[in-house]
Length: 332
Image (tube, rainbow, N blue to C red; front, side, top):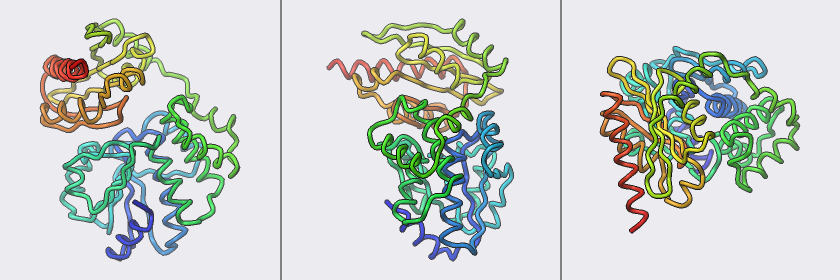
C-alpha cells in the first residue's frame, strides 16, 4: 500500500476538504502522524484544505507537544462538509467516541492508516486500509509516504515524526532495525535528539500517580503456567496503570475502568510473554473481549484496549478466561 493509492482516492473524490481523524484522547503518534500527513497532502495539493480532528480532545502529553509544533487539532471537526475522511492510528470507529455516529452517517469515503491489526468492521467501511503491524508507529508509515513521494521533509515535520516514533517505541526500547534507520534519517534531516526527547519528558501529575498506586494496591494476581497475570481497576489512567503494573513485574496487566454502563479496559504484556506464547493482545484478547462487551477492541501485540458495556468484574473475568484459553493452547 502506498501514498499513490491515497492520491488516487483523492482524485476520485475530487477532494477539496479532507479531515484527518485521531482516536479519543489522541496520543503523540496520532497527532504527529496527522500533522505530518496534512503537511504532505498540502505540499502535493496546495488547493486542498486539510483539517485535523480528535474525538474529545488530545492527551496531556499531546497538549504539551503542540506548544512546540504548529499542530492545530479541532475537537468538533467539520465532518459533514468534508469530501474524505482519513483515520490515523485508529482501527475502530468506536475509538472516535462522540464523532463515530457522525462519521458513519456521512457516507464519505474513509481511508485508514494504522500500525494496529485491522478490525474487520473497519475494513468493511473503509475504501482503503493501509495497515502495517511490522512498523513501530503510524508516524513510521507517514515517513515512508514522504520517501515514496520524494517530497523534502521540513524541520517541524521531521520533529513531529521523531516524537511520534519515540513515544510509541517507549524511547526506542521497542524499535527494530528498520525503525532505527528511520530515526537516523530523521536526525540527518535536522532533528535535535536531546531537545526532542526532552519534550516527551512530561512530569506525571498527581491524579495519574494516585491512579497507578491504587491500581497496584487493588491488583489481583493469577499464576497461569509460568506467567503472572494481574487484574485491577481504576476510574482513570487505565493504560498508565497497566504499564506501571508491568514495570513492577507482571507479565500481563489488565486494568479496567467503569463510568455508568461504559467500560474501558487497557491491556499490556511483556515482550517475552508475546514472543513465547505468540498471543497478540489486540487480535486474540481485545477483539473478542470487545465483541463480548458489545463494543470494540483492538491494538498491538503487547498493548491493546477495549471499549464496551457491562459490569467491570464480568469484563475482567472474561478477559482472564480468554487469556487462560490462549495460554493453554500454547502448551498443546
